[in-house]
Length: 422
Image (cartoon, rainbow, N blue to C red):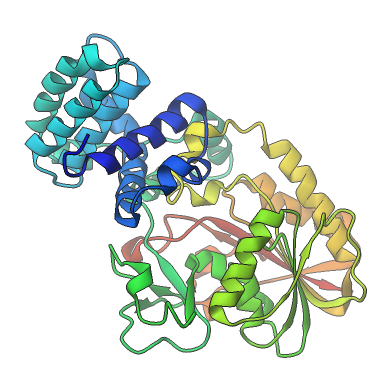
């Protein structure tokens, strides 16, 4: 197991087996000691290889099928898929990718007897032109999710979102104030800055000084719509991991950041410390907590299915089955109901979810309009945000999709609605 490059491949295979066999999210698997004990460069390679393999799992499965009499066990299938992605997507020499897959098969007593199969099929895949995979139809979403999307969007739009998921996601930064000297990044019309591919965060100008933080351009828009001002009392509900908290604090608002998870709130504290920003941190359940005074603005970034982040989290369609959506919708409504009573007259409330689903977006805004007379929905103009008319939903909210800004690298899926206290 001492061959160069074998450790990150072994880690990637372990991550994939955890997703496909155990139904666990990559974020949970990457928080375990086995992964964290790897050097940073090996962790990065393992994560990149695992996510790329998941993004191309079904197209690669179709490419492998003619060479297999029957579907192999998940650990062996994982090695074949990884080797195929390395050769046809990453351009890794065939001998290196296949040799690594064979070594990993031999190192596990459960797959030793299939190392010959891995070698033979891997060599056959090596003869395939890369275009066979890169030009293949993008991986389709699972039925529970695709069916819901087809009830809302045209078939061509769903296919465009699936293609965006397969392309993955670039990395965006939000600046605390101005962009640091020497930082190379594209300034997006929304105000975020998009890094070139394969940028190494900790080595970038401004990292040590806390001049920026990682935040998808779509995720940065809710705070820009709220437009916090110096001295305003702002509540960030469900605040962790803190990107929006830092956005709220940067212009000088008096921010209360609330989250139910003490562990996740520790990350908010760390992020604030790195950037030199301040906020009052409260670990509590928003369904029972009470503020001591009303707020000028409230951000409700509600827990949701996270289906808008699949291009970053390709494990989600393999792990989730849609059963969590109904209780999440109920929780979102409870949070909206609570927050509606905490606003000063004329105060603004932003409701947002990183979801592609109508029931976690437009349907929730409709419910709020009907069930919460203290709130009045106000339209959001996407043009000052660097957007286009097709960003607007019929109710005046924003409906962002991963296939928007395709030429720039896309964005996460989000729904954002703005309300005022009346």
